[in-house]
Length: 387
Ligand code: HEM
Image (cartoon, rainbow, N blue to C red; front, top):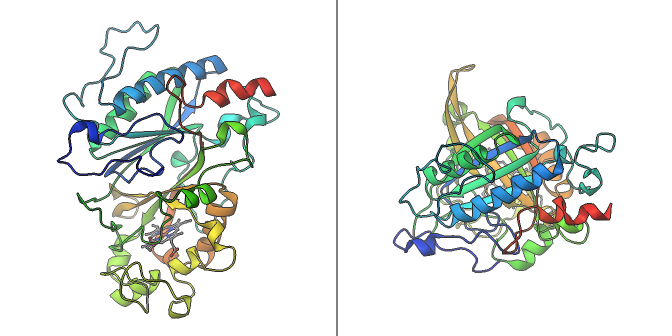
């Protein structure tokens, strides 16, 4: 959506630092990336579809208010004396807060255990991710029936949103796992950010303002269920970096790992970061060739990456920093895109030496909401009658 997002210039008035919650697509996908992330995966405890609808009605109302810089309202039928909003964002502007909601494969149950009667509406592309070579997944950081991605230019605003959505959902959902993330952005002209290995990350990404690219590779279309059209699929991977190991190897080993120069970001054989990549100048096992071999099928595999760095203190098992990349990507079909790329990376990417995956999730992200509608309404109401 061209022009959807506002710039990240802090001198702008609060109204310009507000990203509308409603729209044809959910925000937080093509929105220019904010500085902070709080991601939460939830499990649904509610047993009746009606209770899930109520949850999404309340979450949508709260999301509209919080992205507009307003405190949330008391829960319908709530009897607690506690203030409805926890209050830590009072007086703060919305900081370009976006809230992006998704449904994981387990939400739909199976044909034998239909759960909410929605098994037939599970999109075929919403596969459970297969195991990949070298995975070291911590089961406490895998999966989830639902997810919410909160992104904002203020970590307190992003945290507040997830905290209050979790509180609103008490009784219907529990947080299964969470991840905080950060990245450096510089106003007013965003530069290509660097990941914690010191390399520019996001150079050869899909362009979120290019409607044609988004239609071909990001937005779900006719191939899936009607409730998902205009939505997308999100894959998240918590990827630990072996930073101590990385910091002990030479600059040339670091650069050949990616096939790009560290300072400039230029691909081997070129001078500037956006210069074209000539695969003949690069080691065949380097990250950018393994991620995009530039063969006939490569264009249709391309994904929209929107990742954040994380630093979660010390990994006491190894006495090493628990830091890395919370890899976030959006795509039209995870089978032909993320799974295809990650299968190749897990077998042949030189970067394997320095990273391992510790968390994982896949979610169908429904389209945006109309003025009076709520997130997921076509799934939770309309399409059910078609069964
Ligand atoms: C900690 C893990 C990772 C790190 C540090 C990392 C870092 C990078 C860097 C520095 C680049 C080059 C600059 C750019 O074009 O953005 C890059 C490119 C890319 N990465 Fe990763 N990446 C990681 C994991 C992944 C994973 C898991 C995937 C997908 C499964 C992936 C997919 C891609 C793609 C598609 C490109 C663009 C390749 C091109 O078209 O030239 N990366 N990554």
